[in-house]
Length: 86
Image 1 (cartoon, rainbow, N blue to C red):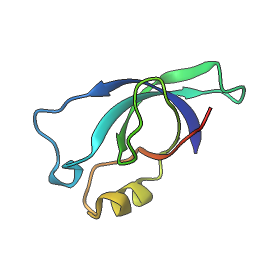
Image 2: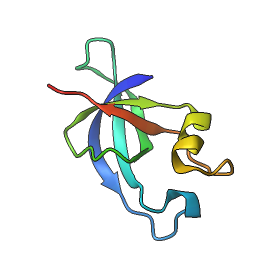
Image 3: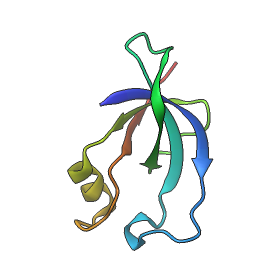
Image 4: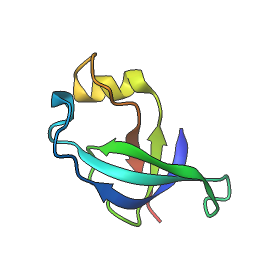
């Protein structure tokens, strides 16, 4: 699990069927101080309604993400676990 900041959205002209109805977000992982950026942005699916500028908890648990989209063959790896109140 990581804390991250939503820095943008992504649009796909063709998505895997399991990802229909999911918003795609670009999230920058944050270091422990929750301010410093760490690494490159990751593409995550969001079913909670996060927006640009929101701080979120994300996970790379592929099994959990596949359960979220209800498809064990889904290519989804990253997903939003929660939106952090400021």
